[in-house]
Every structure is written in C-alpha cells, then in structure tokens.
Length: 68
Image 1 (tube, rainbow, N blue to C red):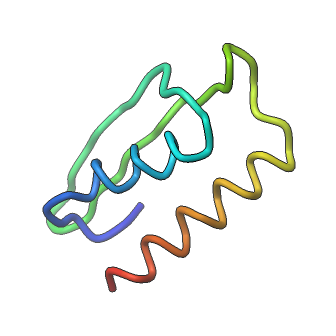
Image 2 (image 1 turned 180 degrees about the horizontal axis):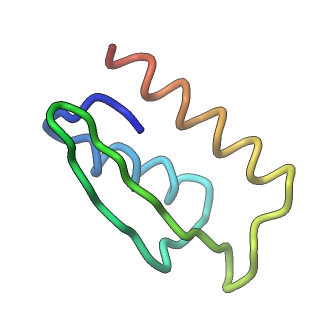
C-alpha cells in the first residue's frame, strides 16, 4: 500500500528484480490516490526465505519513503 504516483510499479518491480526475484502474479488496485498492489514473488521458482523477505521488504520500504 502506497500513494499512487507515476512510475510506482516500475520502481517496485525494479527493486524486486535487483534482489534476483521473479514476479509470478500481481494484483493491481487503486483506490483514490492509494495504490493497493499484491505481488507473489519467488526466486528461481522457490519461495523466499525469511531473510530474503526481510531484505526485500526493507529495500521496498526505503524506496517508498524516498518518494514521500
């Protein structure tokens, strides 16, 4: 969930790619000025480990805070 703005999905997908992950499924929704997107992510076809999830989540959080 983040403020909807031009390039948001690009920045999110780029961060996911930088972590060597693939997007298997994405559900995109916008309510007013808010983007509510769900990504199903794997790495080499397998679920992410808790450590990989934490690293990716931290990167995404930092990226989203930079745009606010």
